[in-house]
Image (cartoon, rainbow, N blue to C red; front, side, top):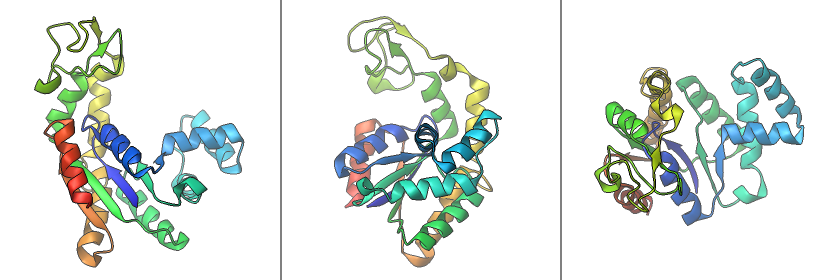
Length: 225
């Protein structure tokens, strides 16, 4: 099962992706990790990507997409893969679609977690980290995991915030890209949605990201059957 995953920062996409990875025993393909792997191994594509990264430039699609395809062809992807973090705009979606078809790789499912932009922003800024265990879930904007005042709801430990979670300008910039329905990430999701409607070759699954993790998980798993 080959799955492409979309969702804004703050939607719980990473959590749901991890659940799918474990359930179907498929690798999680993420562009940043692919860059790091190719650079560390000294591949030709890695060297080209590093030159752009070192200059602070975006790595061109002509380098990124071949890296992604190479990763999809590795033995651990024989039973499927989960692609997350790419494409980020409509042009990349078109190029990825064309490249997959040329390589004979079928995209089976596209998952889109839908979430109001303000709610997504609140969830990011509402995250609190337990000093005893960062895996203890605490968020001041989610009732199910709301901390006990300034203490961890799980163990009572002190809570802190991540600096990037409180950078409203950076959050808005990322969301500007994601929620752009003309050229941004949502436009790329809708590109595949149109293919699903016209050809039926792809199953497009929209998920309401508003409920809790367990509810969203149950909805996702039921729609994957």
